[in-house]
Amino acid sequence: MTIPAVRALAVVICLALPARAADAPNLPWGKTPSAASAYARAAAIAELGRKLFFDPALSASGKMACATCHDPAHGFAGPDARPVQMGGPDLRRSGVRAVPALTYGLFAPAFREHFFESEEDGDESADQGPAGGRGWDGRVDRLRDQAAVPLLDNKEMAMAGAASVAAAAGQGSYAADIRALYGQDVFGRPQAAFAAVTEALEYFQQTPTVFSPFSSKYDAFLRGSAELSEPEARGLAVFNDPERGNCASCHKSAVTRDGKPPLFTDFGFAALGLPRNHAIPANSDPGYFDLGLCGPYRRDLTAVAKYCGLFKAPSLRNVALKQSFYHNGVVHTLREAVAFYAERDTEPAKWYPAGADGTLHKFDDLPAGFADNVEKGPPFGGERHLSGADVDDLVAFLTTLTDGYRAGGER
Image (tube, rainbow, N blue to C red; front, side):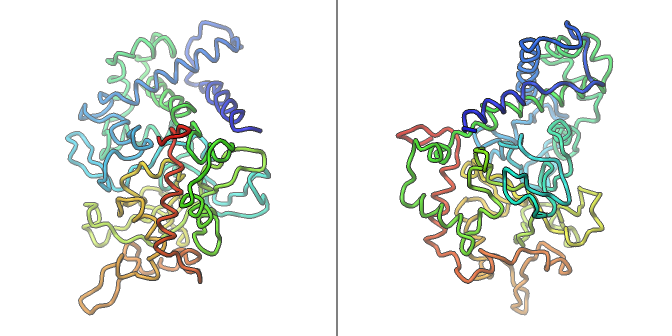
């Protein structure tokens, strides 16, 4: 299947998704609408979602929209270099994790503790371990459920509940659109109105031209319509080399067996042993640790010690647009983010603090009992360590993953 065909298929998938039966409005057609009507309704829901995504009225402060933190100019990741964003009713409450990017999130599978690749993607007999879900800890599966999290989180948009969201939406310029799509009485049923809001946000995030256009220079290279520069080509080689970068082991870079473009993630989880970020207010408590897959925000796996410190591997598409990297936003340039892989074990003093006695506190953002969970293989523990030139070449390659490439020019 060609890449354009994959795009067309993604459009079909995104626009054909039906509403849940419990949320279905009184539609102006029978149980089986025409294809044209179904597509038109889905397109209208996606457009409604776009309006909702940019509306700050859906927050307790009246000043925070989804787009406030998920900035389109930065691949729908954080708008600036702050490690975490401020929210809450007065915009003075600090978040605890860096803003995850939303691009290419359409393709995330549901969370599974034992993930097996499909026949198209690779060796379907290999157990990858935990994979999938959304957010840094994969604790929700559907985009509509993910959309509900910031709406109600007291450190983010901080709405008091579904009824508050419904009331705010009922005052929006798009309220008539919600009534037309979900029923004239929808605002008299706050849970249904809240479901309409989150469903519309889901549909918007499934818009391929906005969130998954596959329009980077690397996509053009895969199609044969662009050539990589020498540094970019060297960076790709390092990226794929299992003894050096070994990046492709988690961030898949090859077209799949059935011709789908790579997503640059396997949706798996890993503990990288990042240094503690003292710029996050929650970290001022020495007893507080963000352990990702095993808590404190995900509660179903807290007893599984081997999962503590593991966070989901994000897609690297549009990574060069980010200004804050990793789940704790501890670094703020792409080169620094890549250099961590090269220097964590070879120059740990650059990354970790030393105590009064000079002892280096490596992996200081994990309780000591979980240090064995940290990744040890290449590029961390390989015999062929990444050089400074390798880091520069990897950065050059990663810039080719930015969408909006135009032949003969940059983005």
